[in-house]
Image 1 (cartoon, rainbow over the protein chains, first blue to last red):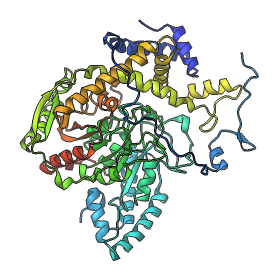
Image 2 (cartoon, helix red, strand yellow; image 1 turned 90 degrees about the horizontal axis):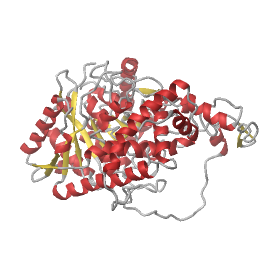
Image 3 (cartoon, chains in turn green, yellow; image 1 turned 120 degrees about the vertical axis):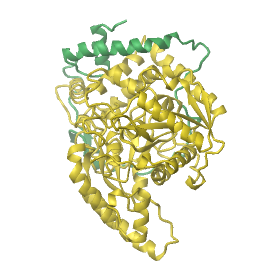
Length: 98
Length: 490
């Protein structure tokens, strides 16, 4: 069952990806083909099969909650596109939002 | 004495200890060879010659001390030039994961695996090319251009650790770190005619590794033989308090001198000899299995019945995990920024413009598989079928000690061969994905050539935490054969 162009746009928006019309068309076709291939999973009877989220036998290991020094602020900010007063600077969050 | 770059890692380590060569000699020889060949190969994204030479000089100082007191412990890696796949952070050195979205990023800290090697005296030559965020099987998805296969420059080196594989194969370095989420160490090792170890999930810390699929990602080693893999693997393996998924089990000493195949049960899964496998690949793989038999192993045919489901399971689970992991690329804390008209526009424009095709495709696929209304049908169902794939291995390892199979259906393909057909590219991973889904270790190593004289690899898999058994079996094979000594025509 091929994806619709609206579904492609919806997924792209959820993933915060701006796509060109050409990309929307191409991903629609390619993602549909990949999902078609994955459709065979539905034929497997998994009613009594638990999911595997991790192959590890570990159960959420605990460690002592001890304070320790973090990285210096200047080093953390050095990679940011913009910073000000020891903080990351970003465009307005609410202005211009629908 | 042969040219320094023609030495194996172990021979180079021995020459350093004898004082026949210095680490500076080795490092300069590698840098000169990189200077001469890497314009053709494009194995490296960044070179760190100043860092390497200062590390080499420091290593030479320690080696001189060691020669006065040879009883003091000194890791084999001391003074050995290596390369690091560009998804592992090294403080202050540009780290891009092959993506424009991390252009200019200089990590404020070092990955545990890399840091352990630096502490063990290794010399870091630079960062190697990779498919963007390690998503690919050819290194063609690097935003900085493809790496070329040293055996045939018109072909891919495999991927995603294609830069590391090409660099080791072309003898630009003595070994390299790679990562393997769905085959990204084993398949390029196979395509480039070298040995590549994908450890058990959790055996090596992922701290400082740029995350792709967090339940699948592993850090491992590419080198020219199993014997050359061991020194790096021994250094990087083991628990790390900074990675809560790293296993507390210590790595036992890997005793290659005890490699003995007599009585070892080697299983051959029938599902891996499918229609579409290149005849030269099947021939070389079957011949290699006969070598194991002639060395005393018992070869047993077996079934991994859910093998054909590994591809759809992987291509739902890995993209789902990737879509979550790559949400952090928002142009706030790192990376270039596109558009500042609003925060939403900043996200949309930056991610839309700076992620490459394959990365956007997988983020979309993963977002879809996790989205309301589709979660149960795709992601949850894939996790359940993953249980069946893992159970296939658990059952098989009750009857055999190792599994032997092809690494990939074909040898190295031509650059551009898969065009813009993602599904046909995904099929390249069909034999390597199951080990990641099951979390078991695997090793790939050369066992012959096809009719174009391109390397063919064999894959061995072992139960969780049994890397020593894999390395011993590979070493026994390499003691009896010479495929790993073949060199590309450069």
